[in-house]
Amino acid sequence: MLIAIDAGHGGKDPGAIGNGLLEKEITLKLALKTGVYLRTHYDCDVMYTRNRDVFLSLSERVHMANLAKADLFCSFHINSLNADSEGFETFRYPGTTGETAVLQQLVHSEVMKVMNNFGIPDRGVKQQDLAVLRETVMPALLTETMFISNPDEAKLLKSETFLEQVAQAHAVGLAKAARLRDKDENRYYLVTGTFATKEHAEEQAQRLRDMYGWLIHVKER
Ligand SMILES: [Zn+2]
Image (cartoon, rainbow, N blue to C red; front, top):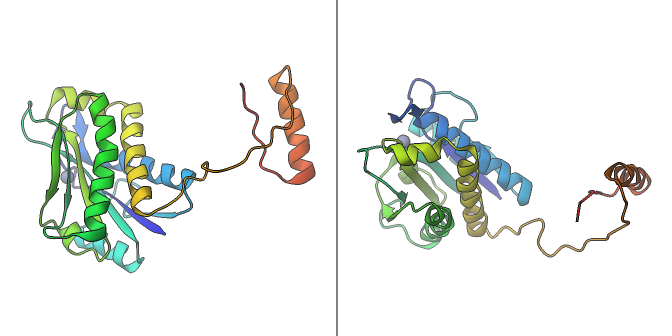
């Protein structure tokens, strides 16, 4: 399973600008955080159309994903209009049904759980003829995470922990669409000992790692 992650804009194209923020920087943060979460929590491969501040045309982005035979495509953008424009919205190609509609619905509803916690309104599950949605051969989705032009939303977009939550929600939605199982689900754990100090626990953990090659974690309870 290969998931293509597309950070909108980049390089000479900053995207929307407002309240001290550049769209291209936020989309890159969201894209990278989403990819890291997917790789950490699921058995899947992730490809980025860009993982740094570089310009790519829309057709280059599409070409990369098509060539790599990605199974799903997710493009990240931030909206801009007026100071009082607000909310989260997602797009799929007009008239698409099946897996594309399911992908959009799953990511949309996961991200809206985060938005609801911050009182960010739902602008809806929408359809639009956009190049990255039209020319990709796999189910594709584009998300517009709030408005850079709105000072209150921009404040949230400046928070790394907020972006982390939004990225995680994208990752969970993508994973559900790809029917990936969380690595931590349905696992059995063997507790090997309890220790009075962390140092002692780490010492014993290292001994077991050396002895058995097991993945050993020291956890505080
Ligand atoms: Zn954009």
